[in-house]
Length: 181
Ligand code: ZN
Image 1 (tube, protein in one colour):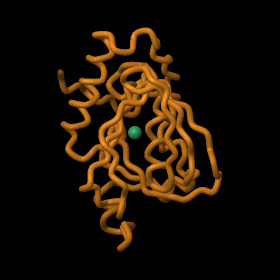
Image 2: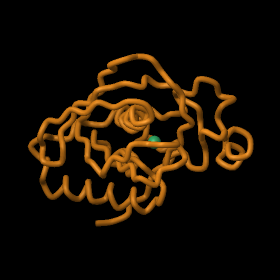
Image 3: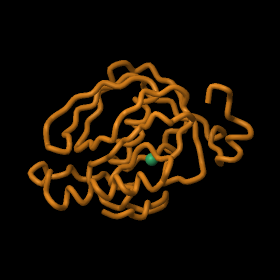
């Protein structure tokens, strides 16, 4: 178990298409170490709700998401306990998009407004290697798309609809945050 360095925008690993995690290796020492490091590193951030393996410089299609009750910046959000997603794929159920101000542990101290489809289905392998499907709507759909973009070398800044809606955190709080945020 260890807290790993979260690499930042500009590091080439964040721009690579990550490799499928070898399904035969799910449950191996390497896998358990990777998941443990993702969990510890996410917990150490204090406010992160998701972390993808490429963000700790491991170019595999593995991500963890942990949405606690206390998440308030995004209003009322359904909590989602810590879960590991291996080799996930996204299917858009309804392409109707909605925007949220997103942040990223690899792009610290900034926020940007991104619109994404708000109803998706995700197929993935869980930490025991079993195939699972989950359907997500609203903000959760945005969170999953943001995290899984990391597995394709994509950052939210690539998806900014309008670069004028890209802000440092303090200016975001001062000028862009509304009552609903
Ligand atoms: Zn991110």
